Length: 460
Image (cartoon, rainbow, N blue to C red; front, side):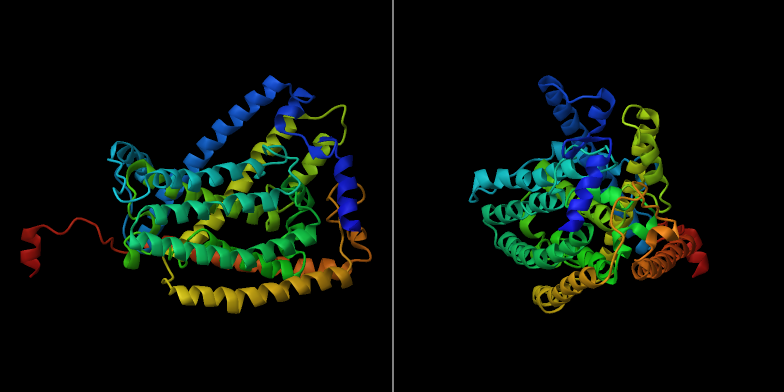
């Protein structure tokens, strides 16, 4: 409780606060709250921007996943439409626009048409609370931003169930029921891992979460204590099941259920399910980045320090520096999210698909007990181990000064050790990917042109 009060007082002291909430970039440059017509214009602009962002993220990730799959399987992947196949997703989208849109004659036509939009809308709406920068967020005053995003994304399961039920197809129904079982079970360890991070930070506001981690990589929540470090990985595993990503892609499971819940879909409605999936991948990666990996903050604490310098004088806010911080922060945040998405793709094209009973066993008998022990350990850690709370660079909190950590040296040593462990693992994985990419270019591609007949005869 005292930690939450401390955070509230600190954020009230930040110049860019309007009452209890953080200003948007519009309000920062206008210097006042917007009028009704200005607010309506902002909503329209925000919706248009986010619709474009979701579409671009989905199109890029679809192309990227096909490239990753091609490299892992020693083939080129998309390489015909545009430079290195970048426009392949656009060409596929145009094809789907003109493709015949069929509705099963014996299915529920209303629910069949409604399901794709119900699956896509949550992935679009959840972007409203995602902080790309200290001011690049549509709803900065949403004090329950983390759980609001999770609640919105959980609506997608209703679209999947409606799609399976309304198709009047046994394969679609099997896929929808698998999604229901999988989603409900894995939401529990997913939520517990988020509670651990929120309990450590003392806030649900995603903008505040970013500010709390602005003192360098050692202030990121993943390295705050051993239990938040474990929560990061439990969240990632549970998010794979929540997003129907392999090896938990049993609702689609083309080797068993044709295409699962969307077997009967075609054309544009079929594409909405994939837009929703890749949009949700970015969203869960965004939550993970904001909650555990510093959000828009860089590993050296530079953006956190510059933000303090730009806003410490309310009467003379450095607008150009603030805009630069937001642009750089949005790039850093996007890179973190894309890095997590790459790992999801890597896992998809590496691990086999388990049975549904094995998926549920892994959740109920493995992840759930681990999450409960982790939650208890995190509560005891906060009770017994003093920690340095507050926003870096504000007040007396200098993250790189040892005097700041007086009385909480055990916490500092723990954060440094966990940071070294995390950096070592990241370095190993990065070098592994670079080595695979460099050596993979020397492998013979499976889809290269075959030898000429005359040359093949001579060799024979």
